[in-house]
Image (cartoon, rainbow, N blue to C red):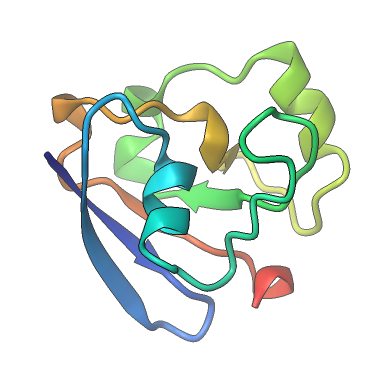
Length: 106
């Protein structure tokens, strides 16, 4: 299991053990983390699972695909560390990952 900390815009933290192989989005949805709606169910067809990856973890979460970049065009408040959480696969190497949710997703 990898412990992932989801931080809502208001600072509320949710530290959750997520099984490797799931996505960061699936970990949030299965544990009712508010602010990650995942309207498309993880198909990279919306931007309702937008998160900011903590700077210390950006390199470890992998590169954005062209499709992910395209979907992020529909998200509000996109930053250099913005990712769609459905596109980040959980591995043991992500134990301790911190993601923050944008204000627009509360």
